[in-house]
Amino acid sequence: MTTRVFIPADSSALSVGAEAVARAIAERAAGLDVEIVRNGSRGAAWLEPLVEVETPAGRLAYGPVGAADVESLFEAGFLEGGAHRLSLGPVDEIDWLKRQQRLVFARCGVTDPFSLDDYRAHGGLSGLERALAMTPEAIVEEVAASGLRGRGGAGFPAGVKWRTVSRAPGARKYVVCNADEGDSGAFADRLLMEGDPFVVIEGMTIAALASGATKGFIYIRSEYPHAFRAMTRAIEIARAAGWLGARILGSKHSFDMEARLGAGAYICGEETSLIESLEGRRGQVRVRPPLPALAGLFGMPTIVNNVLTLASAPWIMANGARAFAEFGVDRSRGTQPFQLGGNVKRGGLVELAMGATIRELVEGFGGGTASGRPLRAVQVGGPLGAYFPEALLDTKLDYEAMIAAKGMLGHGGIVAFDDGVDLSKQARFAMQFCAIESCGKCTPCRIGSTRGVETIDRIVAGVERDKNLALLHDLCELMTDGSLCALGGLTPIPVLSALTHFPTDFERVARETEQAFP
Image (cartoon, one colour):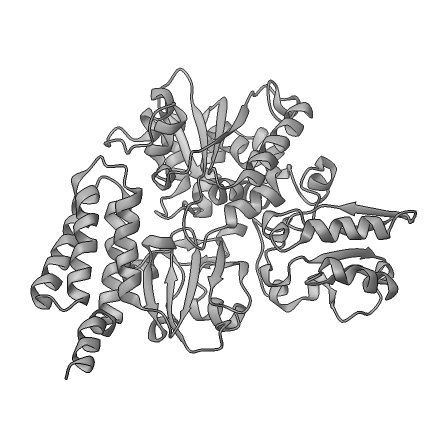
């Protein structure tokens, strides 16, 4: 009987030696009835490389495994589930994974990412097959009833966007998947594209059926070469199997798609800049109206959603809107894949129902700081997200609760900092980041961010503190109200949160000067 050994080929696992582990196991297993499957990652970054063995008792895990551990694993009989110092027991019983509520990431790390049979055997395509038997209106209503909102940051209802495109007149319509995942601390899109690419294809196809689109593009950031290759390969496999192209799955519907690689501009995560780039121009924000849903790619009605939003559609169509809406709280329904990073012991991807608290993620799953020092701040939502102090760690991670706390959920990235962090430097970084990444189209973003860096420097140096604090607040208000897109409009969030919750950090230089020259 063939024994299957699963070794992740996900780029995060590769970065800590998974390829060397795979080679060592292949060499040691030569002549044995062993099949090596290169799966995706389950998201437990602290356990990578995580090696799994399929046994009569289920899949057993060992990790983190290094190439030097392979010989002792074979000596311990790990192919039969033998005990070893790296033994973790049944994968499904690992507490860190068991406590999650995985809908979108249910297959990630479980299946062979490029096996159509594996995908089907684990529930893949059932959502698309149901959608093919429905009218576009019925598909839109199912998504709307589920309460699915855009997982890219703004939280706009997906059903409303899909309905708008469906009803809009146009000679051709498009579905664009925004995989330009540029937020610091965000890696869910990459994890999914590398570990379960067919779910993205299925989600885009369902969106096409709902809207009448016949062509799709997935726009992937240049820093994700593994994800780009994975999606390109998966598209080719799906097309060859009749899942894409003319008469998809034998139906009357046609839909095809292709992957496009960005050029490294953060601004292209904004939907109109992304469209400009897809059309072959410099990534720059468009003035709205018109909205992309009415006049998007090549002037045609276009659905633009991010990876996690589109990848939620197959589960919704397969299990029903009500089942999805049972997860979450208030107007934030379903699950959110949170990405836990920074100074934590156990970083990785944690998918939970909306409404979990920051503390549950950082302490419950992250295990506190990796340094062992006291936790001081947690940034939620990427480089434009707010910094939360320890006193606010019980804030719920849903759209409305985060807005009420003067933050945002964003893409679900959570980055922890211990008491060694200087929040004045983090605030300065936010302004500097905006200045570097600005497309330059609007003055509040282009000039405001540069003046913001200068103003923070003067505040920290103790130069006319009160006047410059007032100036910084005015500048933040101008950027919020006057910027064309979220880059300039949201940059004040981390700056103001740092000023509000960590004001003493902005007195550092002045205080140190006083101590040096009393």
